[in-house]
Length: 157
Figure (tube, rainbow, N blue to C red):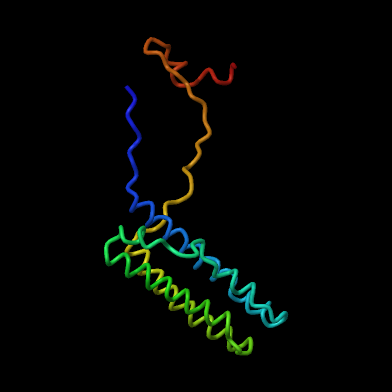
């Protein structure tokens, strides 16, 4: 008889999606902060900066967040509040590129601090996929000679 797959707790799914989104935002910001400021300096275009910090969630449904304990709700709120402050700054600043870089780095540190607390509260996102093992399946019969069981005949195939 086949067992039913275990039903995943909806709160775990919410935690995982938030952790994935936050991880992606922080990773992109770390990877592209210098580049986005350089593009802003050269092109005076804010779009690369705003795209770098784009969240996968426009908004989180309050019904989803209501399922989480208060501590986790507070951590989620603190992270997205910090991200919102950075977004506001990048969208409306009149600072010159050097100041944008310095201020963006300060915002990044605050965002990373909020991210650390978020991951402490929610847990890290699960790694993608599972390791792939390449091999041959060999069935060994109980009465098979020892040479077959040890794979000694592989060279003769």
